[in-house]
Length: 252
Image (tube, rainbow, N blue to C red; front, side, top):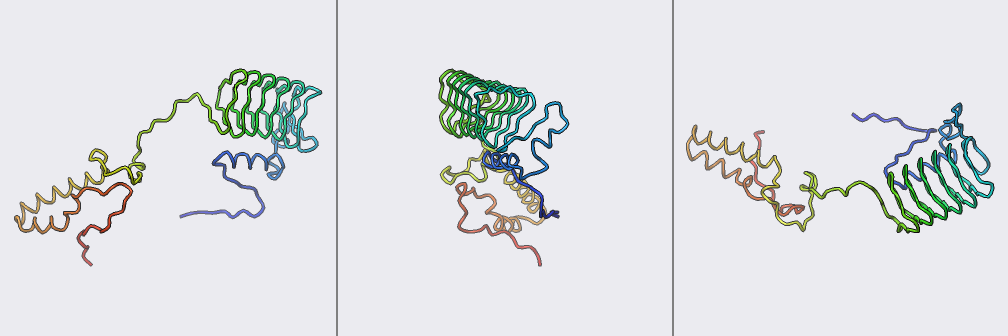
C-alpha cells in the first residue's frame, strides 16, 4: 500500500543534490517557505536573526566593518566577524566565522567556524565546517570543500573540485554492479556467480540422485533433458540471451 497526501498550499521539496540544495535555500531566504524562515525560527533565541532591507538576515552579535558590503538575499550567522572592504553577495555565512579584509564571497554557502583570511575569493561554492582559507586563496565556481580542509596561501582551487580528507572509496564490485555490469566485461567468472545459481545446482543435484534411486536411469534422463539449461554458463554480463531456457511447465 502507498499512502499519499496531496499538498495544495504548503511547501515541499526534495534535496538530493547541490543544485536542489541551492534552490531550496534561495526559497527559504526569499520567504517562499514562511513561516519556516530564519527570523521566525530564531525568534526568542539569545542570537536572534533580524530581517533587513533587500532580504538581508543578520544575527544580533555580528561584527561588521563599516566598509563591508552585504548584498541582497544574504544571511550572516551569529558570532561572525567581517573585515574591511569585504563583499558578500547572495551568500550564506554560518556561525562563528572569521572573514578578513578584501574578501569576495559570491553565491556561496559558508558553514560554521570557517576562517577566511585577507584577499580570498569564493564563488558559487560550498564550504563546510572548520575550513581554513589562507590569504589570497581562490575557490572557483562549483567547488565543495569538506570539513576541516585547509587551503594554502594564494592557492587556486579549480572549478568543480571536491576536496575532502576522507579516503577515496574502493572500487570493489557490489552484488548489484556484478549483475548489471558493463557489456564489455566478458563472461562472468565462476567465482562471481550469483548465490541463487549455486543453490539451484545443489537442489537439482539432490533431485537427480533421488530420482535415480526411486525410478531408475530413464526418469533421470528425462528430468535432465528438461533442466539441462540450468547448468549452462551465463552469457556475457549485460547481454540478454537470444533464446529462453526450456523450463518444465507447471501443471494447469
